[in-house]
Length: 339
Length: 169
Image 1 (cartoon, rainbow over the protein chains, first blue to last red):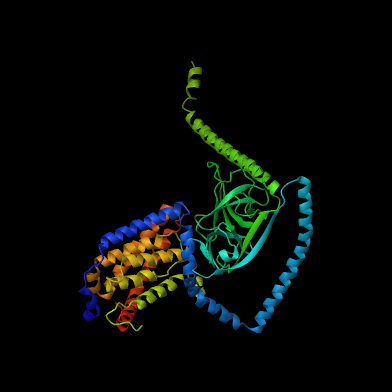
Image 2 (image 1 turned 30 degrees about the horizontal axis):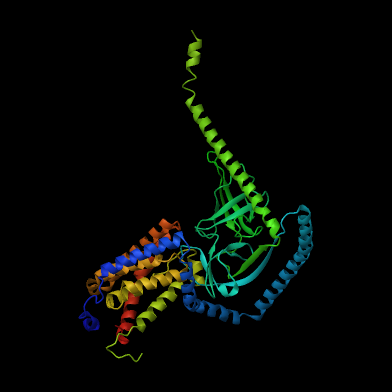
């Protein structure tokens, strides 16, 4: 043991100028500064892009064992299970195709109706299938790496879907890969509307894979358990009309201005292996100018109704407060009346 | 590989760090996810390996290199730049302040120390996440301390063997 360590110990402790303490403190300061810059601005994005591209092979190496395992287990799947899977897929395809036939007719009808109303044409979107690399990301954030990057025209802020709903959006792009933040991340919020009643809100991630939080829906709003939330298209990141989550619980406390509402994402977030990257654009530029106004008035109305609601709630509270404060003043009147 | 014995020879050090990085990033196997759904028990591999090199070769592996490793982890795992790096630097800084004592400790005592260092690192990360509004389930931050402590008696002989047989210095 002693011989094993001895070779280096006769050298000066720190040949370079700075002592251990000085270097450590400098590095800590540097880290804090980096964290601050990274949190507040996106000025580090170019650096991040370069480094992510450079470290891409490490990610590939890390998922190699599980990829190989999946490939192996796929290679030895029995003929029967393949056949049953094939049958199932064929049935599914048939079903989807029949739905698509109606869809063509309906979208054409929709387009004509929209022309009549002179409203903006719906978005045209383009999709690309990306593979979610099995890299186990930071366990405290909901971030995944995709195997598509700048080379495939992926851009930051691009929406990401799976077969069942919205997964998240792209946060960082590198040459051959990109990182996406999921809607369940504690730092993510997505504008949604209730599909049934059109009530608008914002769904916040909570850090739990199964829970989204909708904090700004008034108590009296038309919302029920089991309602589907779809993207509202406000904010401009997500195209409108994609399913996001299903409402699981509503708690109305009349003392509070807003109901406590939670929802479960429809996308199968822990199980997803593939994701769809979406490019969307409004076909009609002139009318797209109109839509923000509409959105603004709607959101203004929502804000007004919300504030009105908050006001009435506080009024109720103050009335109640008055009521409790009144009784002491009431009793004197009978005593006055008695003489 | 054919380095002169008087030159510094460090590729096994970096190789061990790469392995630690890969172990940090590989997806947890399905049986684990079935057994402990949503529970993060993954040991802090990078701390284990960095701790060994920091007390065995304090001249060639110090806080500067640990910081680079931490930044790389932040890049690959998509966290804020500097988040893991700060935690690692603090842990290794403490380790290097006392490396002469730590070398003399029996294995169990070293494991206890690495548990404390892991706690320091996780608290740093917890603090950063709290300050930047990324906090989720505080309990999850402390479970890796148990597995990291438990794995030190396994990692130490392996890394020691690696260092002695390959003449790393």
